[in-house]
Amino acid sequence: MTPLEKLKMGHIIGIMTLVVGVIYGHTIQAQFVWDDVFLIERNQSLSNFQSAWSLAWGDFFGQGHSTQSGYLRPIPTMLNYLTIALFGYSTAAFHAIQLSLHLLVLTLAAILLRQWRLSNLSILIALGVYTCHPMQVEALSFVSCRPELLAAVFVLSTCLCVQKSQSSPSKWWTLLGGLSLTFGFFSKETAVVVLPFLWLTSHGRPKSILWVLTAWTLGLLVFRFSWSPIQGGDDSGLALNLSLAFNLVAFYVKQLFLVEGPRCLYTYLDVYTWRFETSVTCVLLCLFGVWIALLRPRSMLAIGLLWFLLFIGPVLHLIPFGTLAADRYLYLPLLGVVAAIAGCVDVLIKRQSRYRLLAATVSFLVLLAFSALSKVRSQEWRDEITLWSAEVEMAPIQAHALVELGTAMADQNRIADAHKAYRLAWRLKPGGQILFRNLVRIESQKLSRDLGRALRNAVLDPTVTPETLQLWSERLKTLDHSNLSNLIDDQLKRRQR
Image 1 (cartoon, helix red, strand yellow):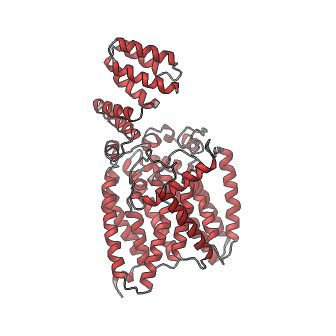
Image 2 (cartoon, helix red, strand yellow; image 1 turned 60 degrees about the vertical axis):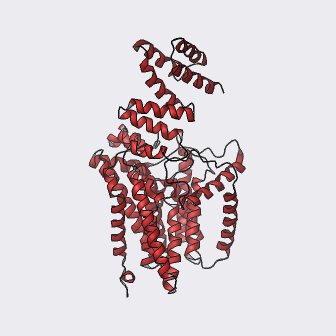
Image 3 (cartoon, rainbow, N blue to C red; image 1 turned 120 degrees about the vertical axis):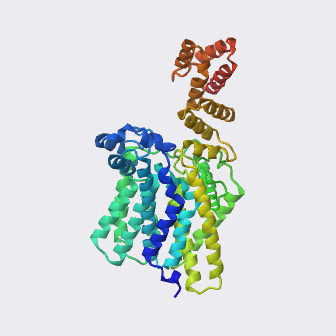
């Protein structure tokens, strides 16, 4: 028996801990970036339990008892509070907990895959792909991705409870399954997708626990919609949403092969035009649906792909929400892909296939390449300037990334560099209240103190009228401040559209 064939579960977790440390250990020294800054570093509501509890049941991106964005995330919010209560605003503590959550996900995934009768070697390869894949960098380097990691922890816990309940029925497994599902739901609503997955893969097994979890989930959904009704659909109707959804499926499938990323922003994507790859995706999905319907018992490949499609569903904008696309949205769906990989590797191992050596060599080279890419990419998350500098170097340049870079530079008192970034952003995409405000504040420093203050008070007032903007544009033009005058003219034109 070879050393690889002697692998035990403890060896797998130990190896994966080492891999996580090698690729992501340096993130312990990283700073808060992007949403971390206002969700954690500058969030005064996390300073005491009462205000944190109010925020937890308020809005994740808003204030306590406010539902301006529609994000309900009590579990991540309270975890942020507990981290601050125990360690203060230590970025090292936040990042260490982030990596610990990922290791917990790996442990639960390994146990679940083992219960699905996969060999330890195939599990090790699958978890290696899951950790080393460059699309995971955002989830593991960005503290604000805690909802994704926590949801994965509780989704896997729910699966394990259902497995245990079906093999040795007990009310305790049902209770633990309900608690796991609840905690997952309050980490990120996507977690409830595990329920249709469990129903679709429960062929020939007891379903009493699934009926209980289904009833409980309906109660959670009623609470969620009563807390903040989600505005479904848009002016273009269901047809556009379906087209958008299929385009996004095709996009995320391409992301597995690193076609577009990894990167922070995908505001440039044209996902409203039906493309060739979208048609191919639709055909493959139909064929997969027929295969799933006919296959009994279901293979690991089918189960893995089913997991991927179900968990990618909530981020396809059938119900519109804020961000169009993000790397972190693949954190849960990617578990299905690696489960399918584990199934294929397991078949090669058990059949003593002559392609085993080739498969092992290819797997090693792919993991090595993924690890190197992830290591480099995760270093770009060190601070705001390194992150957004890397982002604006990727084609196409996005105005949003330039605004973020300018803000990071302004925070470091690099006003001239910030001004250049803001100006380039304005040329790419004129408008936007934040960008306009920042440019006015910087360029008005060239005016006299009193005139600059009067300008800012007038044109940055949320209730400013077009007449006021026109007046200031003409006044600045006569004073030979054409940059400011043109800036205000651009803003005026956008307001009049």
